[in-house]
Image 1 (cartoon, rainbow, N blue to C red):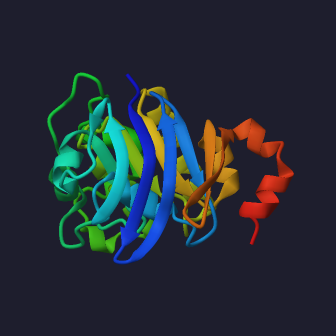
Image 2 (image 1 turned 90 degrees about the vertical axis):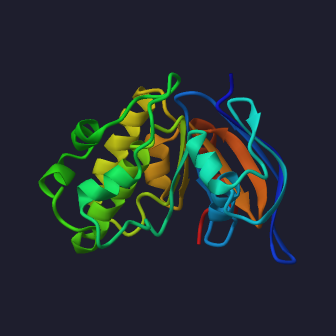
Length: 235
């Protein structure tokens, strides 16, 4: 069964339409990189999938179940994990307490995560487990946000700009973490402006511009298509 399928997705904020007939499919263990300039509609796409955009039309199926119109907390409990761009950790809670907030029961069709396993993925967090979230650096907070989402044992995970604003060493750690998740069979959609990072971890690319899909293909095909990169990805 296909983990995530999006068909004819339109999204609105008030009277303004942001997405127009967005459609794509992501398979098990695949990383789909959603690329585009600032304001192209990448974040709105991810927020629409998890029920955080109040007005959408179309169809979003998670393992065959249409989740359009469901409340965000029901979608999360169905196994769709979301790591927002602004991280949204609980600043007054410790790392361990943040992880506990994200805990959900294990699922038969998803990797099972616990505190020990997320520390294996992000060893640096283990030494910080008694520190409050607000005292962590930006890179540490990004690790914590991903780890907290994994504690929910998601079947599909959405990462919004996971490498943005991070030091090169932390970006490298993020890339290795995404590769590990892919090997676990997790289905991943990541929004990115860092083309190098996307090409490293991604299997396929989806370019969005002004709310419309302009390219859908393999990373190899995008690498060979300079005209498309110039048209939609250069500043």
